[in-house]
Amino acid sequence: MAGGWSRDGAVHEQIEDSIKDELMRIKAAQARGESLTHCVECGEDIPEKRRALVPGVRFCIDCRRERDAATAQRGGINRRGSKDSQLK
Image (cartoon, rainbow, N blue to C red):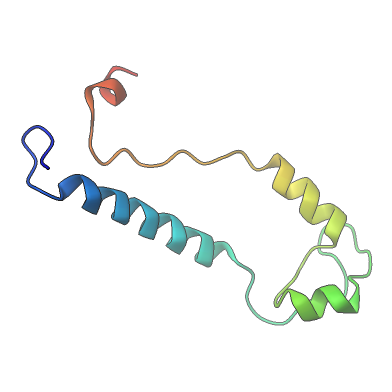
């Protein structure tokens, strides 16, 4: 079903592209390399179990929780360019 002047399936393709973009962003943000023995932020020891479970870990649990809590949710890209988005 086409919406407005778009071709059939265009909305579905836009949704899939948005999901792919978000997955690529998440994968790029993941830690890479060897796990550190001490937290980059506070210098505390990172437990061996955490280093084994999370490859490339750089933060202790407390610092990671603080960083995750401080991270604001990211708004997606409006690929459709709807009138509502243009009015904001």
